[in-house]
Each structure stands twice: as C-alpha cells, then as structure tokens.
Length: 196
Image (cartoon, rainbow, N blue to C red):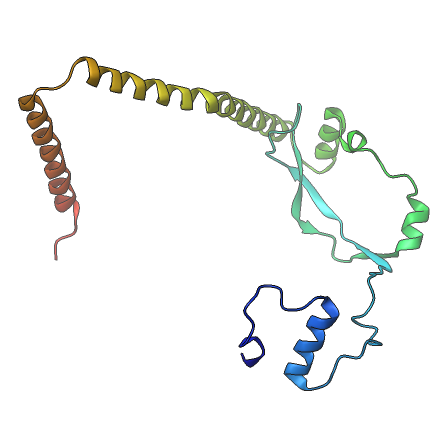
C-alpha cells in the first residue's frame, strides 16, 4: 500500500486522531473533521443492559470446595431482558464481595434438584469433581520432584561414565545394539504400512 511505502519506524503517528485522519484520507479522500462525534472524544457511554438467562446444569469444575459443581448450560431464555443501566443500578445498588458470590453446597444441591437432576446425577458429578481435584493435586505436587529426579539421574549417569568408562569394544557393542533396534523399528513400521 502506498500509504505505508516510505515508513521505516514502528510508530508512524502520534495519536489516534492522526491515524484515523491519514487512513480516511487514503481510502476516501475526505479529511476527518475533528468535530466528528462518532470518533472524537475519550469517553464511552452505556445506556442499557441486555440480560440473558441460561440453564443451570451439573458441572465438572474441580475448584468447587465440596459437593456438586454448577455450570451454565447452552440453552438460554428465548427473550433477552432489556433494562436501562440507571434502572439496574437503582435495583442493585450493592455490589457483592467475591466471597458472597460463592454458593454453599446445600444451595447448589437444591438448585440442581429444582432443575430436575436426580440424586444419583448429583453424586456422580460430585465424585467426578473430587477425582479431578485429586488428580490435579497429584500433578501439582509432582512438578518440582520430576525436575529434581531428572537432574539426579543425569548426575548419576555422568558419574558412572567418569568412574566406569566404557572400553572400545563395549562402546562398539552399544552402537551395534542401537543400530539393531533402529532396524527392528524400521522393519516393524514397513510391515504395518499398507501394501500398494
């Protein structure tokens, strides 16, 4: 594009206004007027909220402290609820703290029962979340030990090489052994390949 042909640095313009001016004049030869209300100014206004209600379903989030996790399903109410922001703020003047957003186990269980889930569904989801939680704990606890084990094994291997150096015939034997393994792998892959 001709507009960017002679530009050598990264920052080509000093402001958003300058950038928009150069792009608009390049594309339609009409200079951007600083009075243009759709682009000028540094503020954003919101005037309404559209609220969509989703179904509550059994979840699988292992971060749930105890009991069944609850998630939002894909189904939602057919009609969105529109409310002006001012009206919404009047009805909900108090912003809840993060700990107030947590649902107790009994509340979650009741919500799910009201949603048509059976006791066995709730128990199954609870067990699944507990297993996932245990699996994550196990993985997290092994993160540091895996690295340490690898380092120890490397040190032991290097130490053995220093203490028990291989003789030339032993080195030659190991090379032949590796070549034989490679040949066996090639042969087995050739046998598995479809014939033409």
